[in-house]
Image 1 (spheres, helix red, strand yellow):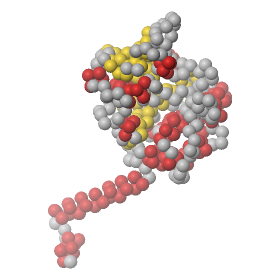
Image 2 (cartoon, rainbow, N blue to C red; image 1 turned 60 degrees about the vertical axis):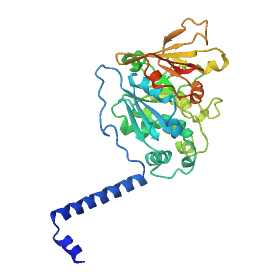
Image 3 (cartoon, rainbow, N blue to C red; image 1 turned 30 degrees about the horizontal axis):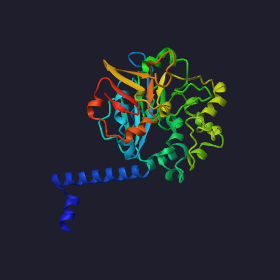
Image 4 (tube, rainbow, N blue to C red; image 1 turned 45 degrees about the vertical axis):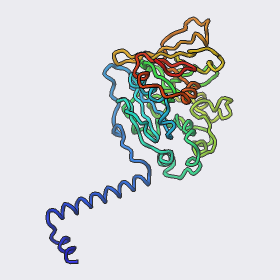
Length: 359
């Protein structure tokens, strides 16, 4: 009792230090608890009011979002190869989700820790003033595909320094952005899809770019019936594309919104780039189908695709591509032994269906 009184009235220097340390720890603990209760502890990559600054070489600044939820996704055998090509692509990439991939990320890749529940609450705060999204919290993270066109609005504090943002899958390899997405080209467009849009498709889930302006970033808010009906639902609407392969949800898709509003809003669209895709290989019983070759030279990546087994009569059989999407081969790779480090460090390295990655 007396010892406590002396400490409170005339503390020694040592005791004072202990008290201040204890108080500081208590304050930090309370702040962390408050923040955790309202979502994850985010540290924006740039200030909220930061302005875009052009790159030294004058090329457009582009950041891509990709999500990873669950241990299986974070440890996917194809993920190191995706990141290897990101490093030399000219893109910046933001990965969000949980857990963090268990290896060193390239300097142009940032990670935002966020569980699925964190993400649900994050969306709630950003769009609905904290209203609980009870159904969304119970669905699987596959539902993330319905959020892709919203990333520019949801994560706007992270993209202030970029002219373009985009969403991409991570079951692909990235080529050299400056070859295809150079200044002279991108200055003419606001939405750029990796798919040609022969049947009216205007956005593509594996790769779509959006100009970082309000009329594009907030286009998703014009969805018929309101965005909450899409978000807080057991249904996956394939909102990032055209409402599913059979177009069951076309009327609530980004393709429909662009079709309806782009002329009035002055949104300029382009669809299609040279890309590689292994979908046709499922019906071709020959080795090294849809072969992609990644080569690095002086810090820049070069990605080529060989389609000679898919379209043997095509005029061009091997050519440079913006990306290679191994949508179906990744399922084979997942069941194979992990490629040795020597494959990842090889220059060049190869991907083909059904062999997977090799040097």
